[in-house]
Each structure stands twice: as structure tokens, then as C-alpha cells.
Image (tube, rainbow, N blue to C red; front, side, top):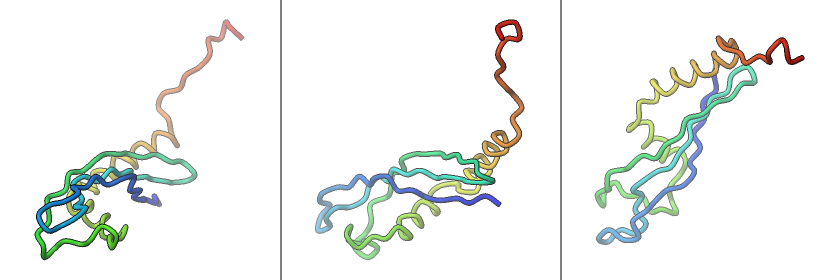
Length: 105
């Protein structure tokens, strides 16, 4: 079974948007996968839509679960998981190897 984890590296914010302060506009993230002791990850930056006053959470009140929820609803997480699983499968069962020349030993 593969364990997936979000890492939120940074969040770019507008200092002020009308009456709102520190409005998240871009989330910098990494999505990691671990299986059988092998690890891999993908990373990116996702632009977020500006909130309305009703759906705004002050920056200091944001939780990781809330930010991850934004990413889950914006990104194709299932496709990312498929890709990361393929990368780990290649680490576990490589189809290519790099060998030293037999005449240089």
C-alpha cells in the first residue's frame, strides 16, 4: 500500500484585497509517496481563486486540512497518485540498469 502525503512549502498572499488581508493566491506544494521503503514526489504551485468575504478564512486561522482540501478540489490527485505509484514500481522493479563496462574491472 502506498502512503501519500501533502507538504505545503509556502503560500503566496496578497497583502490586501479590499477589506481582506493576507489572501492566499498561490500554494507551493509537494505530494509525496512512500511504499516498501521507496519514496518519490511531485511538486508544483497552484493558483487559487480570490475568495469572497463569505468563504474567506484569515491567514492565521488556516489549517493544513483546509489548504489540502483546496488542492484536492483543484488538482487531479488520482492522476498524481497513479504517476507516483508508477515511479515507485520502477524503483522497486527497474527496467533499466547502468553497469560498468566489463573490461574496466
